[in-house]
Length: 111
Image (cartoon, rainbow, N blue to C red; front, side, top):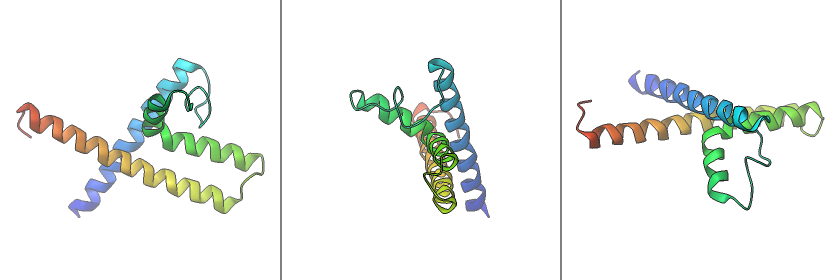
């Protein structure tokens, strides 16, 4: 049961990080986030990787919903993108929790 609780907590942490990052990026740029300029650019690879790592699941869902509205992808492809975004959010949460635990262990604060 403890593993399931950890996975659920990691998923929620991933969703929170994704939402905060995506909302901040939208507020700063004034545009909906997607895998396009100004968020993803071949001339700014590190910035693109950071943006995609933090807000990637939200970018994927936005692009998939736009493609579905325009009829470019099927419902099954949309569901596949949704499942990928869920897995991506879980992975993001696990990474964020791992970084936070390493930072706490290195700081001397009792955990």
